[in-house]
Amino acid sequence: MKEQKYTSARTCLKHMPVLYKRVASMRLWKKNTTNLDIGGGKYDIVTEYLKGKGVSNLVYDPYNRTAMHNYFVRCRAAKGVDTATLSCVLNVIKEKNSRAEALRMAWVHLKCGCYVFISVYPGNGTGKGRQTNGGTCWQNNRKIKGYLKEIRVFFPDAIIRNGIIVGTKGVLNIK
Image (cartoon, rainbow, N blue to C red; front, top):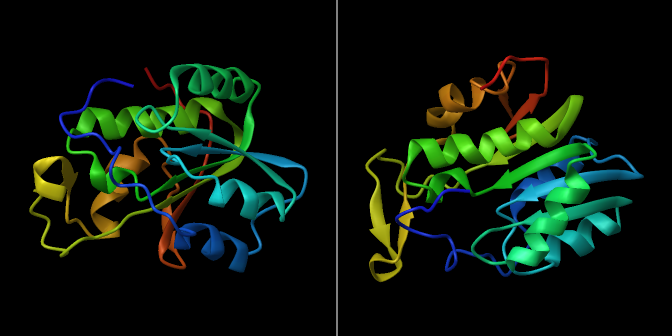
């Protein structure tokens, strides 16, 4: 991923992100599948949770995992994954092209017909981005609906369901 002005290194959650439980409530985690957790942070809370659901979780995070770790994740994901998640990732990326790169990564590694699950933290919901954490981080302050247009470039059928965005990989000609 390209360099961002503000990294997400200091935005890791030390608790279970709501996205994963919402997907579980929709009964969309399937046993013996693999999830690509883009921007998954430095903690393995989600990996342990998904293991209990029979899902293998591959965490890719350029700011919280080593280059070697991310290389091996990309190698494993290159075979195709059954689901991809971006939990509170898009809202901390200021640059539109970097958000597109994260979405492209999900699209490239997903098997056709498989799901992407996306959540965002809306901050104050004003849509006016600002620096956070003493100027070291970024928050877009956009409500979830404000990301649909960007997401639909890669996942045209993306909808908001149960407070998260759900989309499927179709066959697209993405450059």
